[in-house]
Image (cartoon, rainbow, N blue to C red; front, side, top):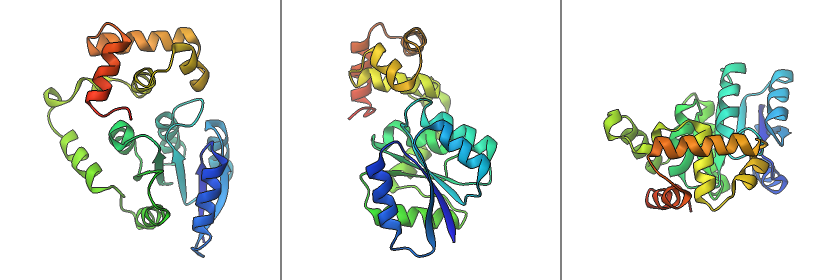
Length: 210
């Protein structure tokens, strides 16, 4: 029996995935986690065959949690789920050690297919993501400016571009307003931009926000 740990802060999504997997007798929804602390605690205490991880959980970002999982339990594969478009986080997630990436809007059968493929030791990516990964292998001079951002800086940039204020971002990420402001300043410096409007325009042009 394959033991799966679902890490997502939305009960409806967790329940939906469990219902979908109830049709798969060999796949067991054996645990749930609502935030990064619960994810790491369950990994430390239990035996798991895979983690299904929401990339935008509250508190520490999903990419940071992913790196922690890889350090704590490198033998446990991670399938990343996300609401944003693949262009936002998919390549970063794969580079950070994810074994697959699926949009939450995908059909349940796609999630099951991803789980089964990853359990064979392979990675699961869509055709679109495969193309993006190939492009990511180009030289650094060809990389877009946002690729130079850290995961947290990238997260802050995307939230700013989505219209969130510094205070809202601080509340969502459990960071201080001062820390978020520091990340914003770093993003503007690295992107050679001066204000949120420029960041928003760039993010829209590069399909980083919906």
